[in-house]
Image (tube, rainbow, N blue to C red):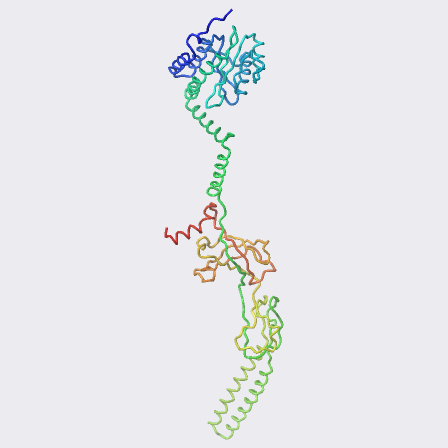
Length: 461
């Protein structure tokens, strides 16, 4: 016996779809629209039940059932139906039962549901938006199985009505729910598996912006340094003479009044004997003139005796300073005279330099382009060429007010004090590098401020 024609065959799929869309467009709320959708499908396809479910957070939620205004999703029948509908979403394909064995789809849950509830035919079609499944429509019929023409017509009606139903579901909710869904879709697009390289590039750019502009980094001014002594004494030659002995060389520690260099006193001793003899001779002549009552001649001899005595005092003073002694306890920093024994020296020639080992300080040379970032009290770290692995904390005590012209440009002298005691191996004249902290700023400024300053000066920006 031939089955009676369905209402869909009488009107045709296109007319039925247009009537369905016309009815859905008149609805302004989702619940009545979903109910009308399910009822119309049940009417056109002679189905005993039509269920509509949406995919929410990776699970299906039934939103409408034909001819049923209220239903409880907690019932076991509803749970079994949603499990069967999930089978269509997972495969993103139309599922019919009964079906032929040649169709490459899994129908286990549909078959299980149909046999458990004694259903003659069941079909589930995914509801797609932008080629992505977002819901399922399931039809249950008691009379006969669904044929291919009915499935094609059903697919046409679902595709036409799907966008309207989803829009009503989204925009018909509370305003906060609408914005929440929009945000969720945006995040899904941003963190989904598609457009990997674009998202990776955007992520890298965001990380670079955060690192360059938002994360503060310590900004430090770099300069060259030299260790200086609080006291540096020059030992000049007290008179013209010759070097006789040398008792110290650079690097030796010396005590106060220790003899460092001795000049040859032979010539001074000869002058001392000559000056002594001249003094005695003129004094004798002055006495003889006084005895002869020759006052004028007496004054002449007395003046000559005084002059000879002054020369004698000068010679004796030079003899007492023939041995150059250290005026303080420190270290010899200059004056290698071991290979200059017997060499002549002129009065005023610096023979040695002795520096005070206590209270050594750091003198840094800071470029004038960076001096505005250095202030009294600024802290920093110093490293010496002799031991670059050791870091010594310092603090700025004074900035010289005037710049000095050097080969590398104008520099300012900055005096820094060491925090704590100076190591025993520190010596005046040692060099190294100093970095003075000047607060925190972004990495972009640290990398580009010199270029920006150069362009401002050259281009007058």
